[in-house]
Image (cartoon, rainbow, N blue to C red; front, top):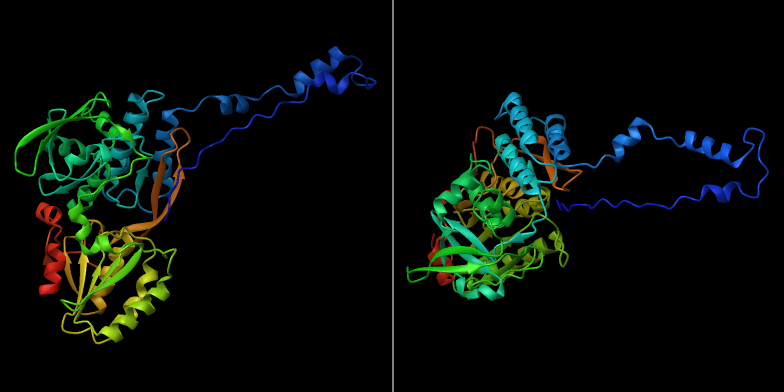
Length: 433
């Protein structure tokens, strides 16, 4: 589901001058003079108490209160992992310590409240304003730089060991309070998206001056280096990737879904990146294209990559899976499905369907999304900040009894070596198996 923050526009229409309505007209029986008319008009337009309340400027406090109301009243079952009493107490404490216009404090506080709920689909979304000019990918204990703006290209593939002398381990500890922790792969994916958001870094006391941020780094030779960077516009940046990443199969397939055939290994690779119709080709047309290719080229195996799929509509891929069940590939483990920390929501549901109804072997990491989860998301924009509150309205049981993310049959985690060399250990395992 696309979620964009809608701006509130207030329009003031100039009132018609009252005197222009009465000058030149004959006074009515009830109103015999302009002074009387003015008095009468003032009485008639005297604002009510409600009008004064509506005119009172809203503040961050209103957002805290509305957020708590939405969770309590609209979420299908919010208090399975935290008591309502504790949640209400923490919301009240946030409201009390927050100043009227503390956007950063509000964001940090709402993220902490949301983490308590332990629901991957209930979240706060905001328009990031500033960010560090890097993108990091958490790999075990390392934070590998896999993207920069053009000015900081030399920092690609360095590892971040400190931000403003705060060790990376301490940075991760501070961020841990902002994201649910029941699924480490979910937390790792969330950190990859948000670790370099300057509002969060400032709210956690890691960054004080956005124009001067010191990064402690390890270069590719293992030497310690440092770099001073300044924040950039989060909405305007164009990311530069390591050239090695362009060699990976996933990088060679564009759009919401696509495929390629590798003659040397007789492998048909399908990257299903998003559970949503692609603007260039419908899913039904893509399905026909793939199965025509299977009939013509008769691949030895099919690799379906769900590692970057954050969800959408699970129903979209079901006709593809149904066709797959009837074909010759649905035997002898010829179907290999790649899953990982970036596999969420409807993509997890598709992976479960493939595992339970075909001969598929799952390869990769535990999925970032849990197998059984809350979902069917609705949203509301908070009145002061415009932050979006996303909340769940349904509980999905996709595999009764399974706790946490979907586990692979064969664990193959990402590594810095993969990024540096342009290799992909999960695909290599899928091909060699």
